[in-house]
Image (tube, rainbow, N blue to C red):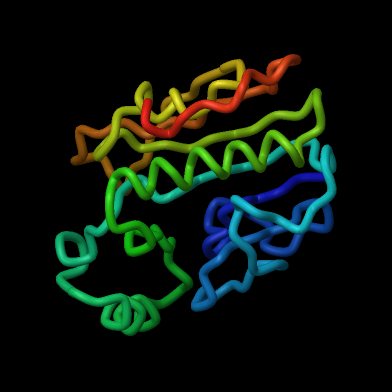
Length: 183
């Protein structure tokens, strides 16, 4: 069983309704609705259910005006829904600060540790524009990096930022709870 923990509009998937993937998201205004509306830091799933989890969180925070020339979430939603063909939803409006985004990523990876099988894989996507990948990976203390792929995206060729997919597996022994202040 596979979980897409940040389904968005399922833009990375060639098949939009596969039978072996559960799509979750907390955004209610998506063109392609998730199977379950929930926050990925607190899912309704039993422990060790999934073989694979895909996690593509927002890579920035509070940047609506910079990217979309809007100031409020309502303005963003209105603009977003005028775009044809269910575009990627970036979630840039979800977090007001860097600390809030990092806190969410930390608690999401804790939940993924709970719901992923011991031999399962977590695929984490990150663009290092606002926060470098190495810094974000410090949230994943109970994981082992298995592989790192640099993504070549023709739509973002002018950007100097790098986007990665990082494949992580669970450590056999979970470390003690860490304080978020270290991040």
